Length: 102
Figure (cartoon, rainbow, N blue to C red):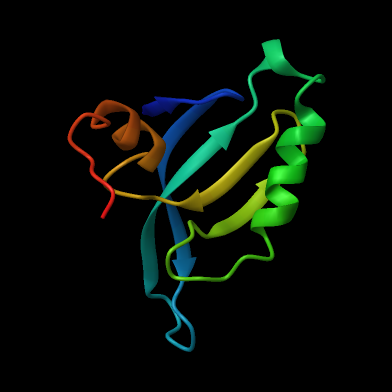
């Protein structure tokens, strides 16, 4: 399911299924966002897309979206944690008249 359109392409909602550590057969289901690079923007934006992924892979902070993985086979994709409230940029742009600096 497409949840957003970004500068590079589409963002899809998905599920990552991982085995639980030391638990045998039980699995952990995690909601994720899959950010893709649109064919229309490839290859002109592929370097920028990969540069963003390269920066994000090293960021580990609770206020920053976690990059889980990237795929460079076929369509370029970034697998990220899903932010349930959506894009902060979109929120700021839509609420600019109600946001005040203190």
